[in-house]
Length: 383
Image (tube, rainbow, N blue to C red; front, side):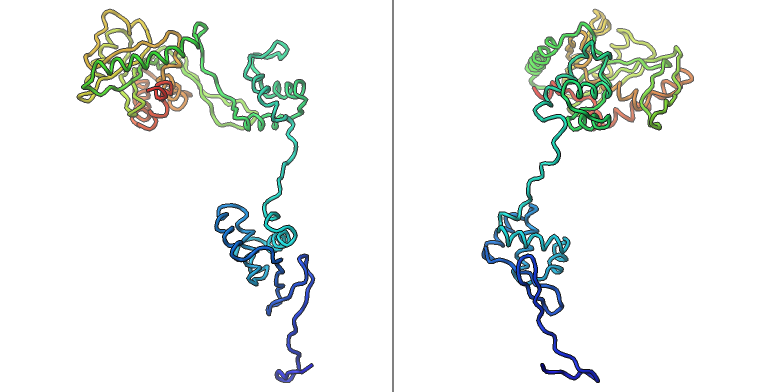
């Protein structure tokens, strides 16, 4: 061995080192990092073509690791270039050496067998959507009831939190239902949804030179008979809020057009046919020239009174009895009460008037909110 003088010391020139790796014998480069051995299974052109095709998939980084290793890069260099660990790069190249391209994709990870089999989910949903049975011992099914049902009827033992996670995965939430009149008829409502489109089309045909807009109208009483709404509070606590029990009140009349996001309102101390006539006249005047409004509302006595005066640019369609769910303005009242009118105390009529007006303007003068809150899918899907 030839010695080379370096200052006052003698040293031997660096020699190549042979290391054993999982993929086979591997050299080292000049910096001491092991060069990766890659089996000659595929040409460089084929590997690069596959990498271009799979650019948006997880396998792209693995193909790039094989390509760079085939070009002579070391595992640390490849790891830095791709943003992965050195061990991951070595594992990918080793997998390619053992099985070729077929070994690069992820192996399936089936995970743990679900407590409730997937083929039983539909039957479980039918059970919770049906009315409670006498043996359930409850007017509505709660989390503890569903946990008991899962264990007894489906042999699936869930924790309480597991029950809620299952419901959320299946697309269910704990919601407050809207009231339904005992005389309402779902069959009649479906029939109404079909014929109201024909009524609107007939009105449009009778006014060929005008733009027909569909509006919904309703009235709400707002007063000192307070309501409560949800609040954030510590788990397990019973938060308290003031609920007023006074007698002062007023009426908010509103018409909305979900298609345009427009809204028109009137606040009055009482509600009768004269007030509705005033509403119709002012509503008619705010319509743009060349616009004919179809006003859909319920059949309250002051809406069908013989003393009702309907402007020429307005046509009326009465809703099906006992079917407030067909009037999207009902959603507006729920929104105003839950976001603005609840958990508050109002000193007198003037305070009510100020609160009603301020909340109405904040919500109803926002076209996007009106389009969202007052949407009528049964019309937009058919018109």
